[in-house]
Structures are given as structure tokens and as C-alpha cells.
Image (cartoon, rainbow, N blue to C red):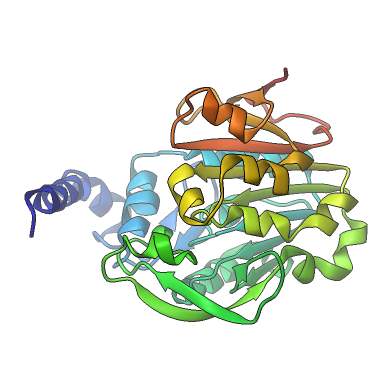
Length: 305
């Protein structure tokens, strides 16, 4: 036990103690299994032993925090009314289930961690668009490769990964076998009917592989807008350099990076490699745009070059 670890544990319990009155007032318990999402009329079910679920979903909800990835999802799905919306790395579905969907929008929530599936299924049952939300329990890759190893972070579900080098830094990770799919393989028969696509992707450095598996879909659509989290440490451990990422998949898109922490203003950059050379942070948000949205949601701004 280190002093650093002890300090983090004390900080964790202090935060819970500070918010305990609000939790009891809203839910009647310190560990509710169903959490109402801010700025939404919907809720999600969570595992109350998962610290990510407690911090990023429950405590954020109590404090009224509205994360930028969730705001992107809700705002762009509403503004563009896409035929297809993809959440790759859905976790508990706090983005997917926060939104309302047009009658002709189909939603696909990809989550490799099998332990999260019961919670996703319960949340889907409560959502009014349940018949158009499909849950895919698989690792999204360039192509289907059968079952592969996936490393579950048992304390912080958002840190689960398919990259062994990333998993090495996770104490107490649990290895499971999960099936692989590509986005093209899952959407196969729907691809020719899609003109507008909204997607979100956060899979701990595995994003280049997932994007490489949606070439047919991207060729078919007129407009696509995606929110992708970039963590240079995870990319490096996955064997990717910014230049290789650019050349393999990102050259299909116009790239925009956030101009401020958690903000909705993004500026266009020529490439990920150029962005990194400018001295960007090691972890940042990026929008990938093909074509151009017929309208931008209120409050969002994309500065073009």
C-alpha cells in the first residue's frame, strides 16, 4: 500500500461523503441501481460496485454534469436525424439511452465487456426506442477474427481494453474471451440505405482498428460526424503512430479538435500528426467529419481552415 494509493482512496470516500445528502435526497440510498441522466428524460442501470459507474454516471448526475461526449451524441442525433447511430464502447449506455431518436434512426451500441450486458439490456427495455436499439457484445475490429482476449478492469469498467500492453498497467484485470466483429459486418445489409451517420468511439487505443472496419459504410454515406477520444499513450501501446493513424483511416475525414476543455467549439487541423506537432495534449477530443452536416446543433461551432 503506497501513500499515493491511500490518498486516492481517502479522496474517493471524501467525495462520496460530501455528496451523500444529495444522493439520499434524490434516491433514498447511497447506491441506487438506476440513475436518472441529466438533460434527459431517461435513465440507465449501473453496477454499484463499479467505480466508474459511481463517479462518471451517478455522482455526475447528482452534480448535474453533462459530459461533452454525451452532449455530442444527444445534440447531433437530434440535429441530423441519422439513419444509423453507432456508439462504439458504450459502457453502460449513458450516451445511447440519454437521447431520443427519430422514427427512422437505428442505433447500435457496441460493448465488448460481457459484464455490462445485463445493465445495457435493462436500460434498453426502459427506453421508448428499444425496438430500434441493438446491443452488440463484441470487440469491434477491422474484420471478424473469431474470439480474442479482452481484459476487463474490475474496478473501473471504462479502462477495460483489448490491448495487452494497456492491460499490463491495470491491477487485478480479468482476461475473458470475446467475439470480434467489424462495423461493416454488423451493418452489412443496411449499408446501402444509409446517407447520414453519427458515431461515437472510445475504446482505449483500439479506435484505428474499429474505423478500419467501417470502410464500406463510410464509402456509402454522404455525411458522417463522429466523436473520437484520442489518447496518445494508448495509441502507442496499440502500435500506432499519429502518422500511421492518419494514413490508415483518418484521411477519409476532415479533422477538428476541441479548442477548450469540455467545450463545443472545435477547430480544423490538417492531420492528427500535425496536431501532435503543435503540442496538443496527450488526451483530447476530436471530431471526424465526412461531407458536411445539413445543420449544426445549437451551441456547436466548427472552425474551418
